Length: 461
Image 1 (tube, one colour):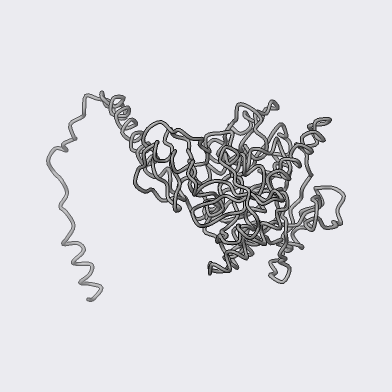
Image 2 (image 1 turned 135 degrees about the vertical axis):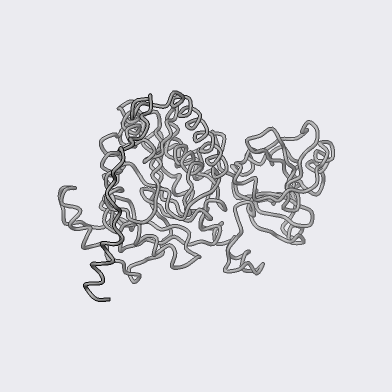
């Protein structure tokens, strides 16, 4: 099209000038920008509708998790250290995560500090000091991540800390828990460091934390200042034992339970975090020795020789053809033909690896277990209380003891070694009839997996 034609076409498409009067739009009697008469009502209705929709969504998704890591921090009267810990997590953690702080009734302003985060940090304020195990258990109940980290409040994390540990854990499904190295810990996880002040630490850690699988090492023990594991492991093992008062030895107990299931413990020696070290425990002052001694005795009473039980369980699992010598969960090491109860009023009779609701008033002792434990037993047909009592007292479920004092629980044609006096008490075996047999008589029975004590739970879990 020529330029002349373009110009002509442009002129012909122009509107002719308006010659009549200009009509202005009718002006509303309501001032421009003034609120609608029903605006407040509509806002309230919309707010209520949105709030109710949010509540329903929250209820529907309450039990759902996310592909990320729940970082659980128990704390007690260490506000300054807690601030450093949380700040370091927010600065150096790039994988998806949530922070859960469980406060053991601190009096130093911790609660007010945590409220400043709004929903950025999830928290729970306990009404009393329930110790490390008690606070961790509340955090485990709250956690939604596919992975879980238990982290002391007196730690400062570093560049790539979580990514490196996740790489180690997820490199092999047989790995149960992973821990880093640090400047302050007992055992293999303590390393010499070149810095004298925590302000100098980040530069050292940035150079140290280079992901390197050749630096991963299996170990017999991980210290509880920083533990990483999968949610699946928690669902198989359950909660920490709250029989350990305030702190110490509860991490050793959990280590044993991880290894009983055939899972290994690994130190990620390519990952360093700073640990001020036992700050909350040292704050006990003169009580520390008393608490430590009591927990040491409780551990010994529960396990006696834990490495003997690990060896026995792995041997039995291998002989039974268990894949990779791994047990499905701790309930495999709990007895059969006993009664248990979760957080509700219902009592269940355990037999042949299933839980039968007991109808009627139980006429026998009941052992309390967590909901996590309870769910591992599939539900079966109900059983009457009288029938369950008859089976509990029956000849097929008594205690068999050798002349040297070794005790077994009889479960039909099978006997199972009782790991300790703590297991005897907690499963109420001391109330059952005991038959003393000679070794040759005991040898006629098939021997199953040993029986260990369940964790003590002082909260509704």
